[in-house]
Length: 18
Image (cartoon, rainbow, N blue to C red; front, side, top):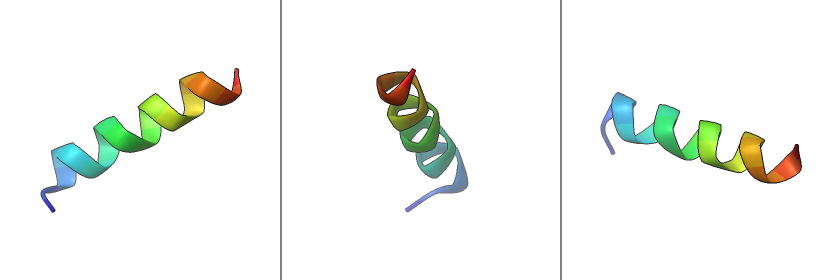
């Protein structure tokens, strides 16, 4: 996985928690 993909996934998950 590319770093950008990981960051995008992390942000996506973070938004779900918010």
